[in-house]
Image (tube, rainbow, N blue to C red; front, top):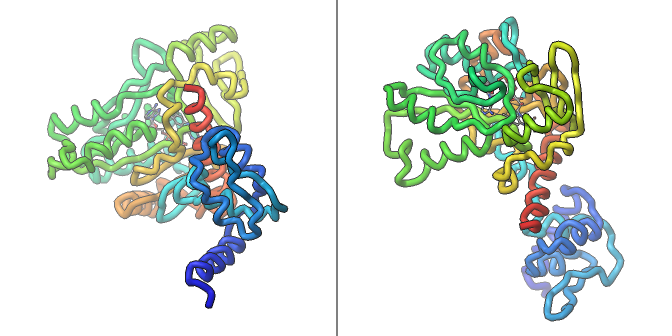
Length: 356
Ligand SMILES: Cc1cc2nc3c(=O)[nH]c(=O)nc-3n(C[C@H](O)[C@H](O)[C@H](O)COP(=O)(O)OP(=O)(O)OC[C@H]3O[C@@H](n4cnc5c(N)ncnc54)[C@H](O)[C@@H]3O)c2cc1C
């Protein structure tokens, strides 16, 4: 009789062959084994359906090695505990995905203006009594200043992206301290992870304070930049940061717009100015949020929106029904593009880990 585990292995391989991306062993070797990310657990060896991978001992190290013919089924890559392949691991769980933009709102939106439209709507309809997001410092151009907004119109003035860390969590606590209890907060994953810690840790302030309700609107983020580094980079390229009225990163290009010119560089030119903390982050889409927004996956002038929680869904749907936002369901292809970028961020973490 075939042992149960063999039957299960067959079942598993049958499912995997139908559902996963087909990669050759070479990909696992290049990204995980040769880079030293491999944990020597032997999962790839044990799951190869044609027994083409062997664990060879090299100087007392266990090295998965191709010793047979690879059929490029992708199972070794999929099952490896150090690769990230499942969409939910890459971009988190979500209830619905949209391509959306604001309608008839006068704001300097970054993409589709959905983030500021949601804050505007939530304040106008008194769903929240305050919103916390980043605005431009009055004294230092392009330095973000975490700000509490109480009026819908104020939010619109602070639309747009500032590519530097903003201390959002301290501002949120200040807003709660002065008596606001229903607050929407906008931030990248590093900001919102801090808030989640306060909400979920057994001793977290937002866990022990039952009066406060915080709605988290996440921004996709590949990386943010050191402020002084950004100023120097622009200066080297004959741009005074004080003259810049818009910055944007899309499709691998960093663009700055002044009254006189529009300049662009590959984002990789700014690698050395990325904030050092970004080396420890592998969350592109701000998984710990009620709603996440970014530009990857939707064309210019649109915001990609992942609605993750019931609370997020209430706000997004109500805003869409009011007509302040127009939204189309996001198709599978753009979602795959987002997952691919999220994977590249996760894999980059490995190479940064190696360089320490
Ligand atoms: C540092 C950074 C890096 C990003 N990288 C990517 C990326 O790689 N790929 C991608 O698809 N999207 C990225 N985004 C998100 C993207 O730039 C837009 O914010 C998003 O698409 C929403 O656009 P919108 O037009 O709907 O927002 P808008 O309506 O223009 O509103 C933007 C909101 O973001 C707030 N905000 C701006 N800067 C910050 C900041 N530093 N911290 C906290 N809040 C801020 C503003 O106060 C405003 O409320 C990044 C955002 C930031 C802040």
